[in-house]
Length: 286
Image 1 (cartoon, rainbow, N blue to C red):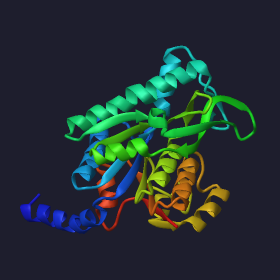
Image 2: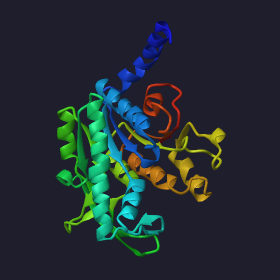
Image 3: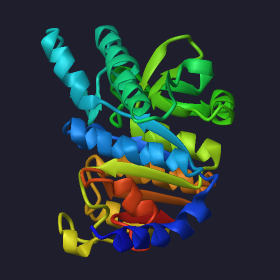
Image 4: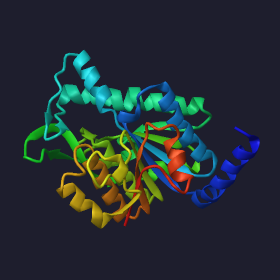
């Protein structure tokens, strides 16, 4: 690449760097984009760069596939009811090991290696995520699965002042003192809303929201809240995309300015979405 072309790229990014300086951006990093070390490094490089140019990234991660792998290895049968993992005591122990331990610390150590300063947390730390026990849609008991009832941002505010990047595992603490497995999409939406973030970005393995199911050519670059519900009713938005969209709607209603669903398997997807006029995925707006 010619030096002049490199300079032009920086010049084009400059208005966005200036615009988003000081902005809080919550990034939900899903397991579907963790296909290898290179992809992990690309994503976390974007987050470290965001921090270096004055933005305030907050990372929330999931880890369903890793949980399933470890439960199977330990001889614990994974059961799902209405799409939700039944989380009994043995499964909850695995969930906490994987989310609060393995994945969380892997992300933190990689950010550190890339020159950033990160702190690994779960929603239990500082009482960040207060959770209440929920049942499945059909009213069945699914164990220690929780829904976020309250977000306490005190610890996140302290870390922000000290220039740390928080990396959060979606574990909630109930008033009963029990640990609850919280959907990572929901946790990211609740945290973004509580922080009144400028942006909430979901990294997935699909291009974004399409008007026609599984048709990338019908990708919506921008979509409004009122346009989303009909797509859910028609089944165009389905499966794992529904909790992401619902989290976007919750965050927008709570005061987040924009939410984004992008293909996190593309190299440097975050930079392309935030620092270019075209973007690469779908932005949801009020």
